[in-house]
Length: 73
Image (tube, rainbow, N blue to C red; front, side, top):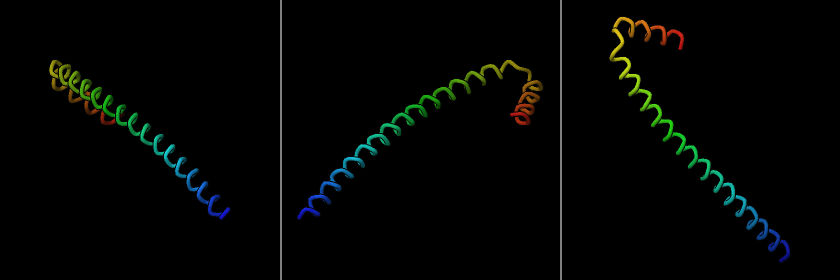
């Protein structure tokens, strides 16, 4: 009977720990998703801004820029 009670206490303890870890995972996932949403919005803004600027740059200069950007990162 004593072993059963000890085992049950251990099960309860481990269940609580699993719940605590899952809560941390859920929180981290939510923060990650929020950060990705923010990054996606920033990428869209920068891409749009780049397109506006690229429209006023001469085509040959833009082609050279893109070539250098591809080579050097």
